[in-house]
Length: 353
Image (cartoon, rainbow, N blue to C red):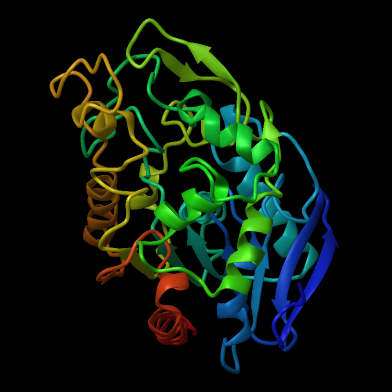
């Protein structure tokens, strides 16, 4: 379907891969660069790009293996660095220096990794529903202590196999709670919110561009003797998010410190201290049998882990603002785009020097 007025599509050849971007037709000044979450694409940012006011221009990228970007494997042992290095190569190709970075979910982890790898190279960071600094799954406290030494309960094996099958087969139906459409309706946003029907069709089509397999989503699996009996492999997206390889807690000590805006939905079911995608919480509520109990495998305190790292960032001289959207799920920029855009524009304006 056609792009919204004021938004154009482009494929940029970088030194690493061909990267598809959406951008504002109007460019100039320090751009705002958007990085999407897992199982999504730049098109999830389209409405924000189309309404970004002058003088701001925007660029949203598809991560490798998603949307129109080149299919390349993800080396999970590098954590999020494959994605962060792809972002660096894109900015280099576009001659963009010190951008304002906006990351959603997985993308928030990517922009944090980029900031760690390029000190002084970021004008500001907006973290929307961010992945915990200690990755996704398998940790027990605010310090990111693993529940098991092999980080069982995180990685590629934690993805629902029925969802993965339907994603691979390009299922557009709403016949199953595990269809991509129904997962998006139930978890990307807080029900009963839904995008307009034509917009939902666009977003479902974008979700279905996800490259499915051991090298991409969700990644390979390693058996574990520890509950829930899957440990992270070495390839693919969900393994890259495992705390076995993803640790962004050094962000607290980053110097110099760009200002940070943390935006989240009050009723997020994906990134939460009671996440319905976390085996610790699923075990607690009886959804996964054999749970060894609170003392062994509690729910991962994802929001609390983020707050602990950002509080340490603030104590070390950084500026952090937190905005919680009431009655909102994992996607404030979709569910309340006017407020999201207003906060973002005010923040990047204040951060521009």
